Image (cartoon, rainbow, N blue to C red; front, side, top):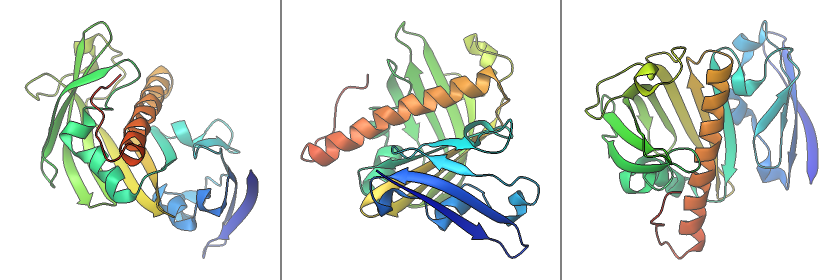
Length: 240
C-alpha cells in the first residue's frame, strides 16, 4: 500500500493539501477529481480542508473541525473506485433492468424502475424492504453528460410519482421534500471513479442513515459490475 501527500496552490493564494492511500498511482485522486467534489478556490477561502482516502476509495477524514466531507454543509459526498470501465458503470447506473439489480440498501429489492434519461425527464424507482414495505422515489433530470455526469432532483413519492413527505413512509419529518443528486463518472486506468453528492440533507440521523443507505447500495452496485465484468457479460438476476 502506498501513501502520498499532495497539495495545490490556487491563484488567490490559498493552498490545500490532502493525503491518500492506494495500491498504485491509479488509485489516487487527481486535481480534476477534487474539483468535481467542489474543492476549489472559492470554497477554500474560509474552509481549508485536508483529506484522507482509504484503499477502497472512500473519503474518510478531514482536518476541518466538526465537518467531514461525507456529511458537511447539508450534503453527503461518497467517492469510490470500481473495477469496471466507465461505459459499463454508466450503463449499470442508468438502465432500468440493471438498476433493479442493485437499487436500495442491503436486504432491499427493487421491483419497479422507470427511467426517462433526458434533461427534463423523470425517474420513478421502487425499493422494497425485507418486511415487504415499498418505498418510491422520483426526480427530474437537470443535467446529463453521457457517460460523465448526471444531476437530478430526489424526492420521496407514491407509486404514481407524486411527491410525498418522508412521513408518508413513517420516516423522519426532517427529510426535505426535494434534494439534489449529482453523480460523476471518471475513467481511471480502465476503472471508474464514481463520485456521488447528495445535497439538501439535514445533519444528524437523517444524514447518517442516508449515507449508510448509499454505501450499502454502492456495495451492491459494485457486485453487479463485477458479475458482468468477470461473469462473461451475464447480467445477475437477483437483488439482495
